[in-house]
Length: 315
Ligand code: CUA
Image (cartoon, rainbow, N blue to C red; front, side, top):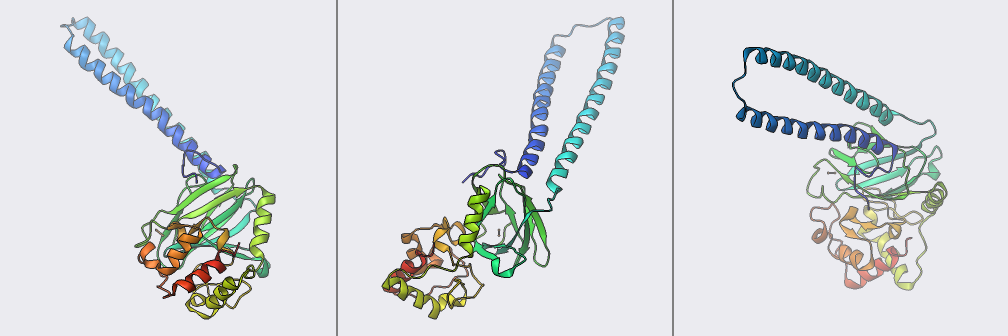
């Protein structure tokens, strides 16, 4: 997953990178030119002979001209920097009327992602993953349920805080297909480092297909073991916090698990998403993400196997 502010994949990150390059390269050149001038001045002083008074007054005039030139140069550079910053800032604030609407809620320590729709039955809720179509702006509404978080997807845009009781917004217009890593950039507690948002930018057709698949209810259990897993999920502690569309489980305290098997990561990036890690996670969540709000579900090894069988079928 790309995680690089200087490899921009969206208009907004490109605007930020443009400002960065526009400030960095001229300043780097000026810095080394200053060091060179300093070295030259020291060397020249050592080798200076006693000048005549005519020579001294000619030098004074040269210095006056040089200082005026230098001041004008600094003023021109500062004006150019301000202009670049102003123009790129407008690009960050631009909003398209046909933008896709997404709401991301920061939680300790994961992201709830909702694709908003005028028709509530077409709304999609997922966790810790964000799919975006390329070539179209997505306006991401940012809210927090608990403490201040900050969403940062370096390849797509800058940081934006998520503040309890307030709405903030981040717009992204992806231009390249790819997979990008987003994180929480504001210290928010024990597992601040495990708040990964896996971002996929894809063609409009692939995005529409993904969104349709997300709207579908969860897959039915495909084996006797998976069926036992489903029953355990609905009757046991899992359903107290999690939702799986099309089942009895409908709580939204923890991540929605309707299509959990299709996600790349578990527990907001604490573990890769495969059978072995899911089994380890279910057997002892605190061992893999100390402080997580998921309590030890106290499952027998057979129950873990059934649950893994069921959850890994939820593509
Ligand atoms: Cu959420 Cu740091």
